[in-house]
Image (tube, rainbow, N blue to C red; front, side, top):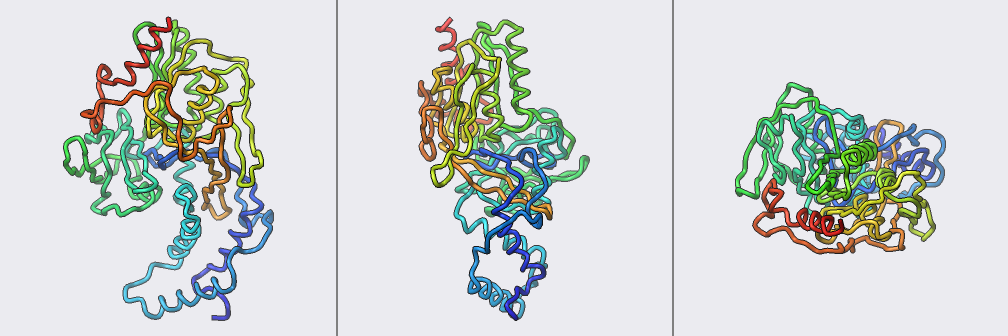
Length: 424
């Protein structure tokens, strides 16, 4: 074997590892308790990128793997090549799984490897329009369950009858078995005008359905808003992607023009997104102060995000949260709570107080790596703890699995309206 891997190109794995110490691009994500994907052409927003680092000459350091480990990989590959009964996957596919395995070995559900196709899909999703079935899904990092959290208006999914809280169990007859959301998305995406069969389990009726869904081009929006009774503005934020902060500012400006005197920001089931988007949204409300800060594994401060906008919002605010409000949602909610600028209503948030970098590599692939922990303005570490709301309100048990909760039965929303009406 001459000390070399038998898989084609596998020796280049060392270059990826070495390059990891001298990277030119940082995209900070707070992706929440779930991996969140908008299923058109696919993918979660990943932020602005620069050229990848692998092969760029900026890397330093040595391989984290000993000669013994590399020799053992050689040995295993040789045994597979000579004895594996079934036809083995091609060299390129086997390489990809080795890289995925490196990230899996970290035992961190938020640190993952993306193939070039998966990474390109994520990048495309941040452009504002997408081709696909038109839903957002989230993946539980422990169970790997994929749950629909939003069905977009005018999408093929809406026309086919897909509902929020449907659990995806299969794609085109292929049963899901713990695959990462990014891989499942590649099965679902496709050209507009084509169809895909998606099998779902619907908890509200305890039935399994197979829906034939047409892929279409759909404009994405992570913000929806309206004016409630008593001039109370309502803004629902489904994720913190690139376009969210601008959409948030537009919503506030419009609601203010309509005479808004109180605001509800609904972050329920929002799994997170970009740190800078969450801080920019806080910046629209606050008139100064630290929004959030991050520390590395050695306790060194990496970033301090400060409010420096000339804009501020001097009206009563209620933020709705629940156990699926995570990461960037917790940055926003925790900041406003610490400053006493909002009353939090609902249930304890998920508790994801760590931040990831998305690091592209020069062959088009990328890794997402946990690099820091974040703290609220008062220095609170909420990781695996969550944020306790000021007013705890549960939804009615009988509505737990209902895809859509009527507004008059939404006890959390009604409590928010009550609080703001009382404050008038």
